[in-house]
Image (cartoon, rainbow, N blue to C red):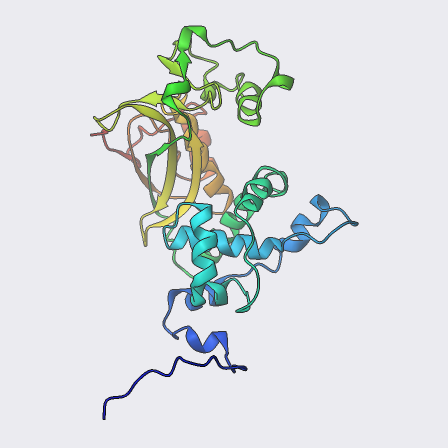
Length: 304
């Protein structure tokens, strides 16, 4: 006999366990097993007031951002929407079936205030790398470094000609992005060593640079530089920088930070503009402070 779904009357009580709805082989279970955020609250405690209304749990926000990164959800609005309806995401974020999901605007405030002041993202990244090293996923013998273009949130229609941009503007009357840009003008990697006038400048994000590198319509962008251990492709460091930095070799600092994590690779692969330093402190001292990625232990690959 053909059955029919009984939907004419709602059930008054339900017995439901959220964990039962998440398959044992789901990726969020594997991440949750390896993820340790026990340090987070103590790290951020100095940036929260001891009085007032309780804030959104910072661990909840970090877990939601992890969901967005792992599952390629690029909009915080969309992250909130997906966590609202996806039971696996709710379970990973430790939200009950009836718990409210934070508003997307809370992420912008946290990123530009407490998370930035506490350097939370960098600390979390380094702890993940340390966990990968402890698990034997990082060989430490060979590194590769390259950059990806990240489109900036800057509107071409609101840009101005480069010669019309004034660097001597008052920071107190500028937006946060402009203040950060003005504060780094003395840094060689952010333009101090170059007198080149850009074709266009975005007043809302002057550090972003105009590029047509994709051979299509030009846009404002940044360069996101990744340092990758070649054993299993684990990213061991990352740095955002302008596209055409006059001191692109400075991005070898990614490599130096990895060295502080007890990684001394014997070989590296990079474009010509990078400055990889391979070997121990004693070896580097013997080559001289200005040694770049030209010794036999480093293989250079021309950019295509």
